[in-house]
Image (cartoon, rainbow, N blue to C red; front, top):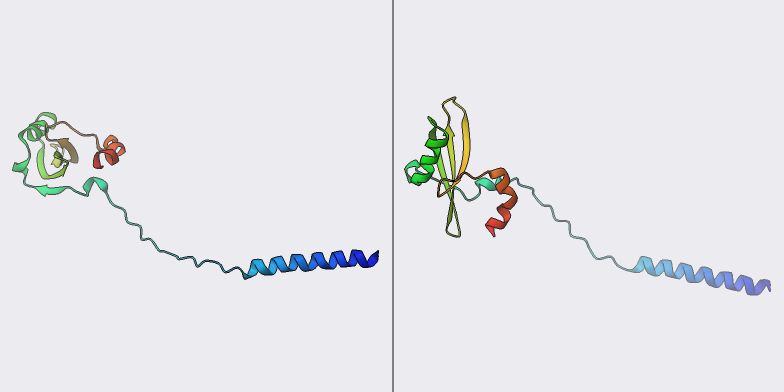
Length: 124
C-alpha cells in the first residue's frame, strides 16, 4: 500500500514539474517599446493663416465696431474648411486690453470654448 501511495506521489510530482518546465520553455513574443513624444497643439491655431485686416469681410469689421466700439483690430486670421470661413481677430480695446475673438463670415461671434466641444464634428 505504501508503494502505491509513494508511486502516485512521485508520478504527481513529476507531472507538475514537467508542466512548469514546459511553461518556462514557451518563448515569449518580444515586446516592442515605442517612445511617443507628446506635443501640445493648440487646435484653434492649427489651420489659421494670417491675412491683411482689409481682407476681413465687411460684416466682421462691422461686428467689431458695433460690439467693441473704439477697439482697433491688430491682427486677422482666416481658417477655411469645406467652403466655410472662420476668422480669428486680435483686437485692442479702449482700456488697452488685448482680446482674441472668433467670428464667421457673416459677423456672428463664435464662442470658442463651446466650439471646442463641437470642433471635432466640424473638422470631419
